[in-house]
Every structure is written in C-alpha cells, then in structure tokens.
Length: 299
Image (cartoon, rainbow, N blue to C red; front, side):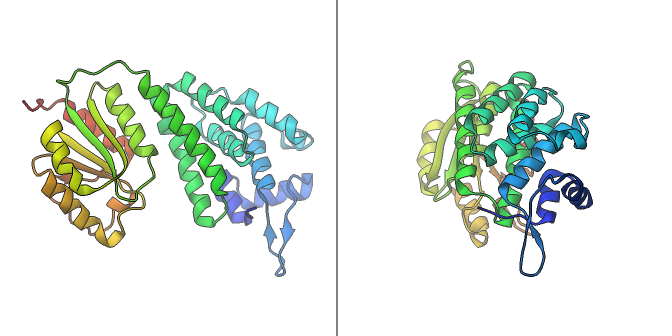
C-alpha cells in the first residue's frame, strides 16, 4: 500500500499541513507511522478519511462532530451531501475517496449523479478531468495503486461510450474528423471524450482507437476524406520523436488540419508543420471545434 507524506496530503486534499497536524493531534483523525528519521507517513486509509472529512467540513459541519463518526457514518454523510452541482472540489474528493476504497458502486453513483446535475460534458470537464489530474499527482508521488487507477479509467470509459452511443445520428455530409492514437499509445480517455464532444456537436467522426501505425493514415485519408485528423500523445511517441511523428502525419495528410493533443505534444521549443496545432487544454480543443463549425465543409 502506498504511503503519503503530509505534503502529499496537503496537495491532494487542499487542506493545509498545519490544519492536518492540528486535526491529528486534537481529534486523533489520522494515525500516521513514523520513519526511522521521525517523519510522519500516512496510509491510504488516512488519505481516504481526510478527503471525506474535508468534504463534510466544507459543507459546514464542525470537525469536532465529524471526527467522532465512524468511517461508515462518514461515507454515508458524504454521499448524502454531494448534491451541489457547482461544488466541484468536494465532488472530486468524494470520488477519489471512493476510488481508494475500490468502491465501484459508490463511484458509479457519484459519476451518474454529477452527470445528471451538470450534463455529461460538464461532468467530464469539471469533475472527471480534475479527478484524473489529482490521480496524476499521485502517480508522480508513487502513491496510487495501479488497480485503483484501472478501476476508475474503466468506469469512465464505460460512461463515455454509453453517452456517445445515446447521441443521435450525424449526417455523412457533416464535417469529418479522424481520431486515433499512435503506436503503443493506450491512454484512450481523452480521445474518447473528444469523439463524444464532436458527435454531440453534429460532427461526423471515424474513431480508430488505440495503437494505429502512422502509415495507415494515407489510405484512411484517401478513402474517408476527413477535414481534420486528431491524435492524443500521452506517453507515445518518445519526446525526441514527437516532431518527426508530426511531420509523418502531415506528409500522409498534407491538406488536412492535424490536431496533436496531450503532454507529449506541448514540449517547449518544438516546431510543428504548418497544418498542425496543439491545443493546451480540452476547452481549447472545444473552442477549435467551434471555429471549425463556421468553416465550409469540403466538397
């Protein structure tokens, strides 16, 4: 099981370290162990409890009252109070705590309720994405169990696919987008959400998914005649090869707009071909889609 320093808890929960220490000393809220050098280290149970307590205190409950509750009582209270559609921070904390508990039923309920209140797209932008960013911090700290991350990713993938499948059909005369991931790239959530957002806006998409060799794009473009080609670079290709990868796509799709999204595409000083763009945020990608909607569709 992963262990967290007090600075990890501060970053993940949004609660200052001195407040965490006070809660620990005054109320026995957390039960850290000490290293040989006398440094406090916290387990996943401590982080989960802190996230849930933070959610309740943020709703106006006193820490002295919350600290007397059992873990089951705290969990029930959190589920009951996560009903403010604009209180994104507390929704993220509740989801993170449920993930740490491998509580799929609770995760599913929280996501479904957030989507019902906000709409699916806003739920993804304001709840799911911040949650994924928080988990990314945990990966960097080496304090997340891969099984926990897989549970969350699988559940989100199911949600996106179901929401996409529920959308009305799109005419073949609409603007056309090809979406794919490069060879050995398996991180699919961002591309799946892009596919959903495009179809929700009446765009026609050809979703090719994971691990597509770049050389296959020439035949795809010749047959499908897309207006835009989109890919997400999370871990592939290697940093030193991103510019070459962009040039390869540009060569296979010379008259198409190419969108490169993801951390590997946003390296400082990288020079991309003229037909390539690299939006920094998902909201920037959605703004690009809105701009494309105003352009005439290719004959």
